[in-house]
Image (cartoon, rainbow, N blue to C red; front, side, top):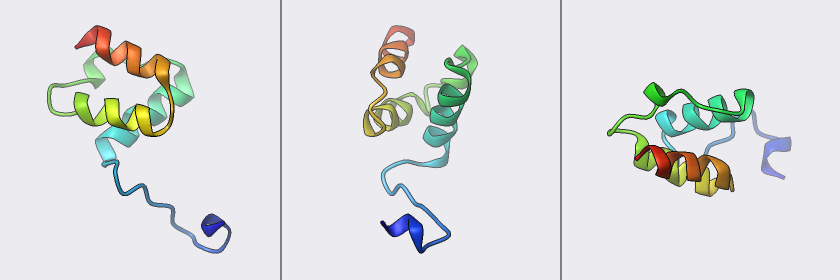
Length: 64
C-alpha cells in the first residue's frame, strides 16, 4: 500500500474542514452542533460518505 512507503496520506476529495469533523466524530462518537456551519455542512456530508459513516450522515441531515 502507498501508506507503507510514504509519510503523507492525502484525501483529494476532502478539505480540512470536512476532515476535522470526521476526526471529531471518530474520536468522540458525536459532533457539536456548532461544528457544522452552512459553509462546511456539505463538505462534511461528502466526507462522511467517503469514509462510509452513515450515522454521521444521518446526524448531518437531521441538523440541516
